[in-house]
Image 1 (cartoon, rainbow, N blue to C red):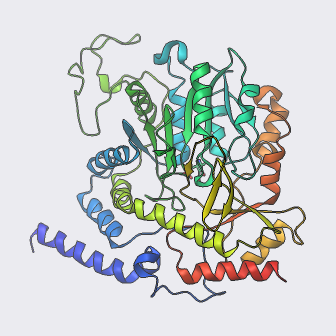
Image 2 (image 1 turned 135 degrees about the vertical axis):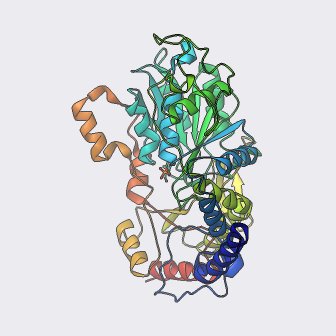
Image 3 (image 1 turned 90 degrees about the vertical axis):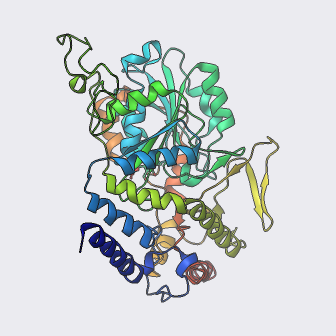
Length: 469
Ligand SMILES: Cc1ncc(COP(=O)(O)O)c(C=O)c1O
């Protein structure tokens, strides 16, 4: 057989294998009826990767190409992702945490002049959430200022923004659209505009959300994605930094991603600037190879081309995945509608409540559409069970559940230690009562596209029985 015939045969067999071997990982809409599920015996994870033969074939095909490092698949994926989000540029990295690290680090570049973030500058963020939304602020010698969370939307309490602001010190806002719920972008954008602040949207859990009809991740200066398996789309490990408008930020993010280099040639390319040997920078000799000139103290945070090949297939499925998450959330919300004595349920920003006809809204005129990462419930203080008892019950019945990540991060050992070591390393606004409530009472279960109707029904029945004991 010729190499091209061999390749075609390998890919044909790979597809055949994946269709047989990975049926349980298909989106429920494509294989719900033959999904192996025994209520009470089969574990229902809170999230899982959903894929078909297309991802497996793409991964093998890219492996056969053996480009290995980020290359043609990465270039295409970056373009397709940027097109999806309506941003100028998406830059692939090896995780959402790396994306957050790069986004904030890029803003420390001397190339931004007066607007650069300097050590000791403050960045407003939110107390309850995922640790690597905040850690990169500290890793850059900056000072996070923690606002409280609204326990029902899980998002930052934007009414505290002005109190958190310190003239001459505050330089940026960096916070997440929590569990697929856009934060109040109208207020945050106006606040950043008024004070000339950078905005980084951590969109890791929220791709596909929209606010007033525009996708989250396309409002701030930079935004970030995670493609770790529980997320809306996956490439195994992976993430992206999105550059919304300003292409100088693209150069900076790429520089910090790629060892800190000054050169912006794509992998395998030389002399994009047409003066590879014509630069005189730092104290280097004139004509020093631009490929080895470093204008920043950088990292290497690139993913592999094979990961990008998987991501490209997942992106094609993304609109369906987003809809499936919304549909699954609605099924759970309907099925648990009369358990309001036991739980407070997650609300989109600007929503005031929920009826069987959908959400009711405040009179701000703003609307958000959630691309739910999970189905969040707060166990009410007066409920006849604790959150831990509820979580244990779900575990015993094989229903995957999670806390809202790190809860109130300020209470985590890393931050308690930090406060002891360097009391001025972060600031806190108010009592963080909302973040504490989230830490003590919140729990979420899955909405991911692999959930079948039978699984959803079992989840609802199990919770109902527990409450009615
Ligand atoms: C809001 C948020 N930001 C960042 C991350 C980090 O992403 P990764 O796990 O890809 O590093 C996560 C992880 O789930 C997250 O939930």
